[in-house]
Length: 369
Image 1: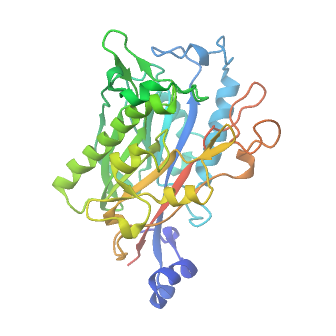
Image 2 (image 1 turned 90 degrees about the vertical axis):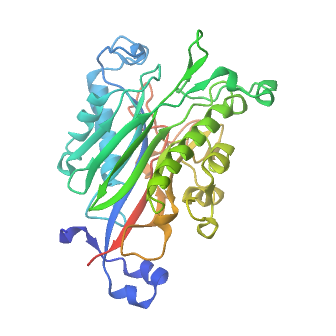
Image 3 (image 1 turned 180 degrees about the horizontal axis):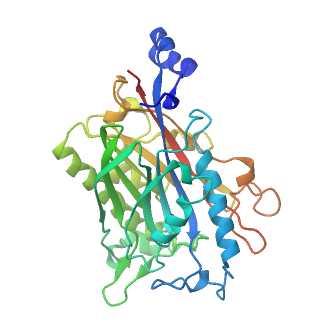
């Protein structure tokens, strides 16, 4: 293990693990998720990308694309460095990605290239052509298997109560597409990656759940189905290994308090509530403390979340454990003037921003030998 990856966490870990922790050092890894918001290239592909072409509605040119890549790379290179100053995120889940090419361009950015990120990506059936993916530092994480698991949902899954009231569309570029012949709602697959983090097996699920297009209530059954699929994936892993370490992350288009998360996944707000095969969601407590990863109509929420299985929150730190979580929202990422002051600084007519979401992250720690 390289010495630079050993971080003394004296003050905080003293409070958590007792006086003996003061003399210990810990290996630290940052795990992040970021909605990259419309990371499209300027080449006309097979997907519905006409808006993001030089002659499209966004007038999306090569200089703009390159600036977007630079902006995203700056954010990604900095996430977690407050408490892990010697390294950026080891694992990065992302969404709103057009194709593998844009990820290859992103990891070649000067601010990221020395991290030598590998890519796990599949094209999804989403009609906008946006996908989820996982980036990983090759020196620390070795994937052993990965697959995309389709979310099969249909228009007739809308329940009666949701049909009674049609909320106005949320302001989002993310619109689920419905096949009029099959009534299937085409949305993103859920990406499952299993591998070894410094020799220890972990499982990662990367998500971008169906949007709130058509209204939160009407579209809720789609995200509830996504939550159930997430839980099904976890249960299949637990059948093989009851002590499996699982992280599920993504833009869920729902808050930590919504049915899709609370009942579909069964996530808990407090560590002490988590039982065997249970899931802990640190971002629920953060939401109730007034934090947010996105804003709509002046109301903030946390749609971007990273949750961990019970094995990650045990007290023994001889293997990787969850330490703490955060939202990365530095001043340069925030709109400073106008109607959307305080919101994430996104792409506009006169400025290439970052994203309409702030990224989230957690730290994993293990006592060094």
